[in-house]
Image (cartoon, rainbow, N blue to C red):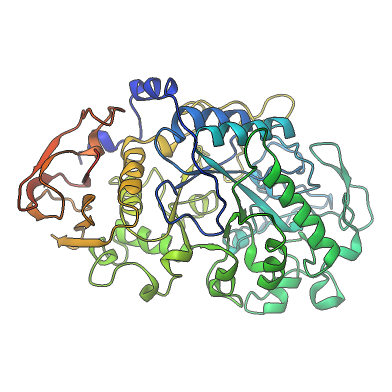
Length: 535
């Protein structure tokens, strides 16, 4: 079946060249716990990217294409290894067949809050923050605040939420044994780390250090260990003070501007929301907070909305089901009941909606760039064009079926510099249709949903106020129709196929909207059309 060329997973080299020489202005960095109710709020997750490469990408592409924030991997010292999360088998015993060692979670196994990791040094991190802010891009630090390092991780738990700004845990290891050295040289053993000792951890309802076995038991979820990770007790003032100091350091770390703009809180559902509230209230300003809280089990996302946004995994699942046709349809996302709270998901004002992340793309819980019939790109077009939540675009790398595969490292253990579309780095945020739709997203921010049209159940069109109009054809047949819009009369560029970076020049097809707001078009199978006022 023919796949429209502009939707394929490449970007024209001339576009990249034109952007690398652009001059980007700064913007206001007033910190908000909620995503700003204005344009430029899209987050790009640069998974496993080193700090120097992030800085370069902010200047050459992310800033020029109007993305508001970049989400980086956890910056703190972690355990060592080539994998993306590196969990070591400190027991030296055979690992059971139902247990999987996963590599890239090294980042989510903190040893200390020293800002030296495989992505770079403290100085490189600070330079990255300043460079991105100069390009108009805020930085959101990922982290795990609940636990420390584990010995092994069970695959079944990977979707439970045990990753990112690590407030919940530290790495694990046998009690009382000096078993490891972190990336920056810190020594550790289980319950003994720089800044923490055995008195600072939960012991599963106050008795023993047991692993969570029942996710419907709130006490277990919040005080037992997730797959062997040493579980920090955030109710303790000393622990709170240490975590607040770490976050405050990140907030202040930049040469000319404010520090990071916010945090993604890994495994938030394994922490008491009141403890999180206490810590966040001690931070200067109002940094953007987004929290990993899955639905189901003893804790619910609504318990955490008072602290910041919620990563809305259920919305991700609904979008995946609609674009694959496994359940529901694309038109049902828009009409008769648009995707929002009636779908039993968090309100749009509290939702951080992801296309995918490192967990979901490996577990099959989301679409990926390899999904057939342009499903991933079409769903990203929908996400950026629709009016639900704060969108995050994931930018990952190929792992060839190897769940554990980390980003390429040099002989010293540092992540290699990244060049988009080389060495397996996919750079989804650079796909032409996705990058241009972020400009659409910025142009229609705050505009209402209107002028809905439906062809088949897999064909839907809608307007965003008087600023934009989007047509999605997720069907195997061409959709030909005259569409009613609220757009002013004039000639518009179809940005799905526009590879020209100039706001006054269009290299894609043009569409004429008549004085009555109508236009006629034929949209190919598994294709889209998008118009907005300043295109």
